[in-house]
Length: 103
Image 1 (tube, rainbow, N blue to C red):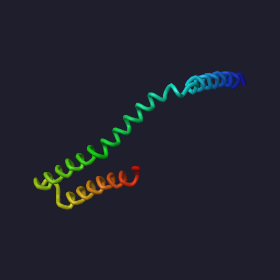
Image 2: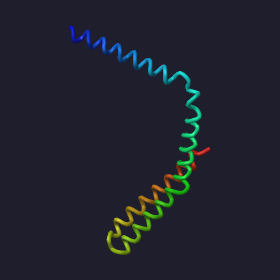
Image 3: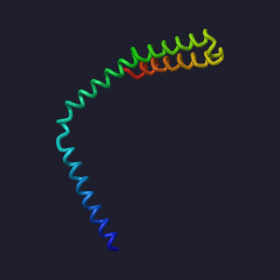
Image 4: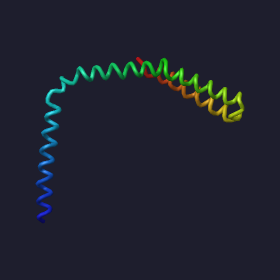
């Protein structure tokens, strides 16, 4: 019983500290708006770069490596076709979702 009383006292302290921290951090959310705008701009530019430059270049490099591997007989024809179709589908899916979900 004594241990239960000690735990409830500790829990009350933890709850009070958590509530105080929540109120402290939620007091003025407008101060965080400038930082959130910077983060939004960074994420938007990352999304634009991914869709327009990084993913197509990565797909082209992967296809080039697959072609070199097939030409050098490091991979079989079946493996080359499977991987090439997968890379093309992944790149196309990115472009299709961009067309569908952008304003």
